Length: 273
Image (cartoon, rainbow, N blue to C red; front, side, top):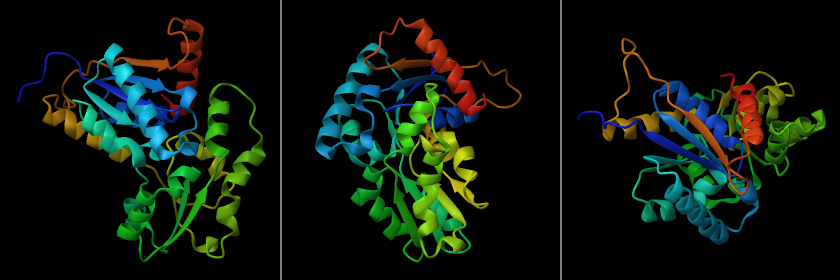
């Protein structure tokens, strides 16, 4: 199948800056595609929504964005939202939808001790989908599940230049450390797309671990779907035309160049690009 003439565009939707951790991995694997980051700050944090209201809200916002900003594929870059809203989005949209779910399966395969940490929002911890992932892939493991209410807001604050006390990162891992099997912990799942952006801060309060998040797997899935649709990955011998990266914060004037400049500056700091 020949490549479709236009450059493929992927819309990465999240309640905040968690989209950047997913986008960084997609860009690493597919630097030739256009990425549009949508940050629904008015809906942040998704982990505290009632499920029915969250589904309605996200479907409405995504539909409105796509009407103005057409895309070839949607990534729902939030664990809390993906576990609730994917069926409704896939039923209502004509483009492929990729969701993010806790990386419990690869973590279980990686762990040598059989003790895994799961750091997420309270909403993700409470979802039946997460319990089913543990039952399906980590039944024989000890999974220490911690739902932090303040970690994602702290990442948002850090991104937008607000001070965040070191105690926030300490509290985020304190419940892990209090578990009787913590000394055996060898693998930690970051089950919120915000959390990889502060891995360095969290790691400062933990022993050496294997860190697992969904970014690489999501990027592989995006690549697979784009290849199926006629946009194959370019080889190393081909000149790769760098795709555009754009950002939009819902509820804020799109013409605010100062805000977008700040966003780009912070994105570089967070993702290392």
